[in-house]
Image (cartoon, rainbow, N blue to C red; front, side, top):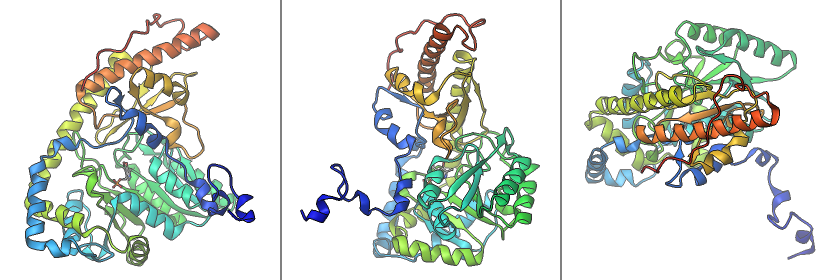
Length: 438
Ligand SMILES: Cc1ncc(COP(=O)(O)O)c(C=O)c1O
């Protein structure tokens, strides 16, 4: 090693001084850090957002695969267009039609999951110090992308009807007064991750109006819109404004995330730049995955498969809400009409991040609220996912969580005598966890 190299870096990573400044924003998300622990079979994981792919009959995929390889093998195994396979983009129009979106096949760019679409949009628009407006809380994977481009995520208040218009106006005014460059509003208006809420029909035009008059682009991320449990949600923002919205979709939740196929629909000029950015990142998205997804959409009854997913998630949502009401009445939570997530508020004094090791000891995992705020707030919240475990496991998980929360509240009472429920809560015995389930 040269003398110069010896003085560089540290014992763990000699290349530390060489990294670009933006890598300081790269850190393992709290969700990811949890995966290792939460994936142990004895732990009921209410932490990750893994879709219930066991509800997808494998033969549907196997036969699509066989047909692609028989009829289209050389194309499937070859590089493709940077914008994506045209046949799939046609099919994407049919899928989006289910939610009332009309677009031209030319407007669609297929991507490696919608996560890549978020990254491409960020790459096009964000310089260091720029501001992205986003719900409070917001999707952890988007916050990470914005941070990696050295942008600042400014959270905007939400309630049971989603983004609060007055809070959006106030955030825009405050950031502009401070001289910030607001590049776009990133929003998950339907079955929000992690908040579980949906932007009401009444607020949708208002949010669009505010952004239009402020000249702010909207990035609408909508991977869950077709996974509703009752009436369909209000139509996407993109149905109301084609010029001011970049729309992101995904097959990860309505088919399977293993394909890594998502898409963006963007106004013409943005779409051209998205394709250039995609080509420079990956040359072209996987022809193989796109053709199988397209074949599946051509030949399988995908609408009824989405119905099967809806039923499975509805049953899981009900199991979670029922168990919360039974075992944790001292908490508050949202009741989602679709999607994967329940957002839970803790009584004052409890800290979801601090409580997590204890929860894992009790064999239940969740995601602390801090993961969903760029500024590290959110300790008094947690996200519970009901998408993956069986309803029975969910009930076991919530019982274990009740043991953990009860233990923490008892501790609060013991040390302060002023625990939030000291006067009305019966002392809770911390039971050993119930027997494990598969
Ligand atoms: C709101 C939101 N956007 C984007 C993604 C990324 O999905 P994909 O698998 O399409 O990359 C997720 C995944 O959980 C998500 O919840």
